[in-house]
Length: 357
Image 1: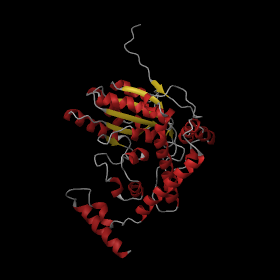
Image 2 (image 1 turned 45 degrees about the vertical axis):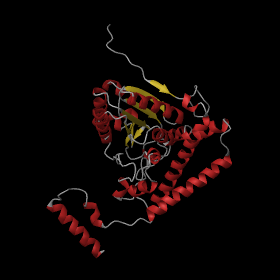
Image 3 (image 1 turned 180 degrees about the vertical axis):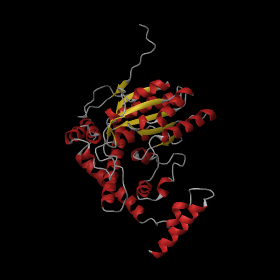
Image 4 (image 1 turned 90 degrees about the vertical axis):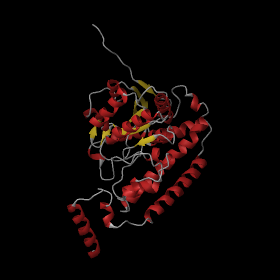
């Protein structure tokens, strides 16, 4: 038999679920103290998430997509990018966006139904959130193509979920990245569920990372609950991209510990046993255990950090709650350069209805 091609998918993990090292650390983390500010950032993301859910439950926020359990994945992605790079998120990557300069109050405005929350003050060159699944992958590929044509040492990073990796937009993006050797990193955040559809029902591929093989991209699978593994995977991918070696697909194995959104009830499709097992792989206590063993963490220190994070989040919540509500006609103002007549009629009807209420 003649074999046309073979491939392997490398898997990266440095910290086990108990926080004990399972492999030698990359050079960047030879000094474990480098992980402290990233752990603090993970605490901030979790604090923001907890308070955002409370806002939604009390009617002060619309439907909200929790990031509980994704902290290491998102913080690792954000920490690995340069300011001049371009990020194309889906609708859950708060940790990465905070590290790139997006303010929590903007995230709250977005989920509060105010489109100004999708027009970040910084970084202006990042893409806004994408609710249509995986369309942002094509946007990132376009940005990467522009960087290559301009010979700029920049790259584009896009995030999608496991379900998103089954969409044609994802495949088109990776095919373009491979065909044109684009500086693109496609991060597939595999949390096991595309809302209520399990990963097993989405694809027959043994890994999601291997989908990049067909497009000619480098591929990695990493433990997405291990911050060190996420950082090392991103380091390899970004160095390849900046060095002109093309794009990478990184599959990040994590778990969505909360419902898909606050409009969802995951108990209808996930077993209690599955969720209990997933909590044992929680990225926050995993990194905490490692830092404690390295004599870099203590309970009083984290208590102080948690209090600081709470104050920072509360200040952002107050800024959101105190923001001036836009007039009803604002929803029509940026849809068309030349609005059609029927849209203008709807605009006038909305203004009249608001005046009567």
